[in-house]
Image (cartoon, rainbow, N blue to C red; front, side, top):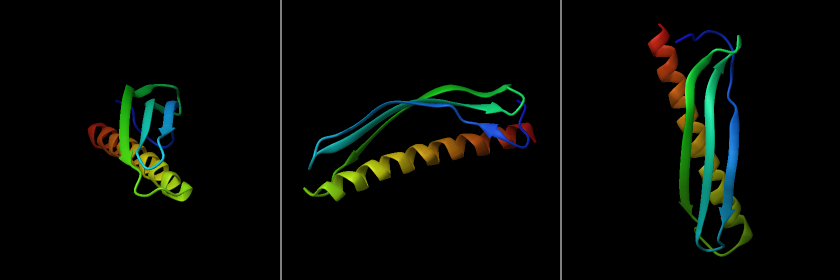
Amino acid sequence: AHVSGSYRIPIYLFRLDAIPAGTVSLKAKWGIVAKDGTTVETIRESSITKPVKGKEYNDTVNAMSDALADLSKEIASAIKVAVSKAN
């Protein structure tokens, strides 16, 4: 795998739905592309569900934020693995 410098992370967010006082569902496809256009990580699909811990609007927003944070952690972990394979 070619890994150095900058990367592009194309993310296709297909779903970010919330059921108040229920759950938030996130579904996305993403990959890692080197600055020269070489695919470093093939397209992956992430499905994340988080509970909404309350009945207020901000509780739903917090659950959405948690789902996006989990997606970010998945992507960061994949970048670390790709870098370690390249070195």
